[in-house]
Length: 146
Length: 143
Image (cartoon, rainbow over the protein chains, first blue to last red):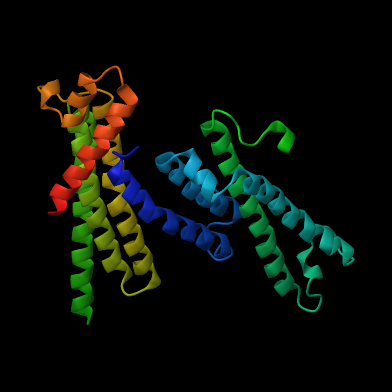
């Protein structure tokens, strides 16, 4: 691994901008192409690139498998929780207008933002989990843990 | 002012056409060159040059806007990643033993010779010598 000097330097330079670009795609999704899924994939790419060059053990230190598993569930919880919250407020499932009854556009804006955040978190976690599952000979995420 | 705009437009289109020509030449080279190394050379060099020219031309088209900032970021990203990808491909080919035509094994860097000498303690010996030679060359490079 020591002789990949150029790759290590370049990856160190690029990982942080890639993660930042994922956040840009995530929160700029209402104005330009992008959204939760693309942002999640880009964020996962940052971790996968780091793992490819520096090894699975290092990337496990940065983004431990137990956190991957929790984040995959957290995103779905955000998505479904938004829908259930609008149900509890007396509207239909995922009717974002429920959050600001006087001004439905504001509610829709915030609702979509939260739902897309949920999608992004889940997609990033699942992509990293798929990479971990392929790259690790012995899976750190056991079948019983799911 | 109008003449200035025309000048900028002409310059940007000249850059864009030159960049497109570079990329076209690179594509033809990739298809027509005889072996892996010359093909890799053709596509990597022309790709970087064409990318820079195209981004410059598009910056001149966009003017002082947010688009220019994004184009500069894209240009910097491609400027770093393109040669790195070429290096990774070429390095993988060389390490796996795919040599350029006319180059025999002794002409390779010292790593290969070290690996040949100690086939028994392959992993430990090679990694140690590798790090040693790497640090040596790094010192030599800086000093």
